[in-house]
Image (tube, rainbow, N blue to C red; front, side, top):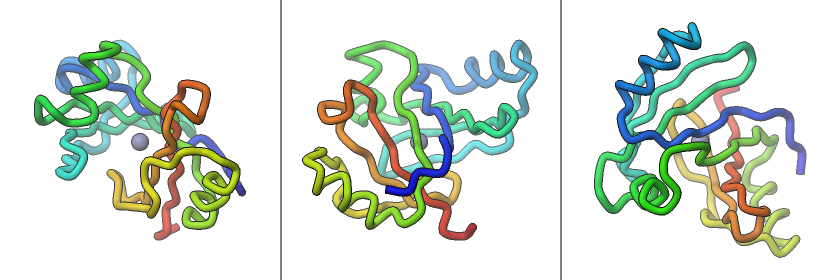
Length: 136
Ligand code: ZN
């Protein structure tokens, strides 16, 4: 697998507006986009901290994946996303190594990325996102 960098850190929050306020007013970052990802039942907000992107995730329903995460673990770091070259091959590589992939094929994530998740059962507790920006 060719991993180039950490693309973003995903943080689950109960209230997007309140958390945006923290990142803007306390951390001095600028929210550059708010985007709803309907199939994941989340609303996301994005910041750049230098080279690293922060993705805030708020659930839009009581039964989405982020709602379940919040119920179980509360607010906090939800996933780490690694940029890879060739996401299809990266998924296949991980599966060949015995890692459980949540997504067998890449799908459209927020902020124009193709994404796929690896199950935290297989990744030492960290929900791991593989992503590729095919628009370059
Ligand atoms: Zn993400």
